[in-house]
Image 1 (cartoon, helix red, strand yellow):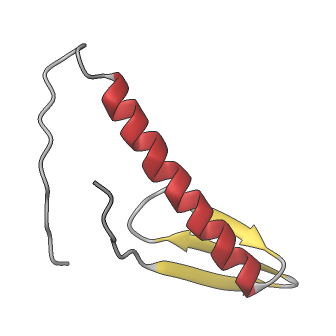
Image 2 (tube, helix red, strand yellow; image 1 turned 135 degrees about the horizontal axis):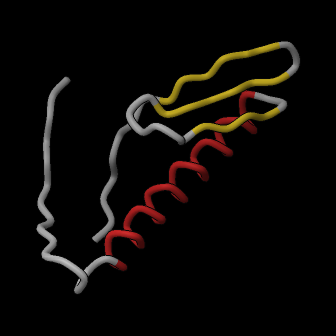
Length: 75
């Protein structure tokens, strides 16, 4: 089941380029020539990381005991 989640996107302009990253998930970062392009690239990068993490988690099923549960934190 897919659900909506909220993350914190941070954008920084450096010269003619923008960089962007997700505060909550290391490794989700990108760049673009415009802020619009950077936002689109960051959304795609986040979706790819989430999909990859799900795939890796499912791949390890059967190799060891796995427990899945929702985890809510307020920070």
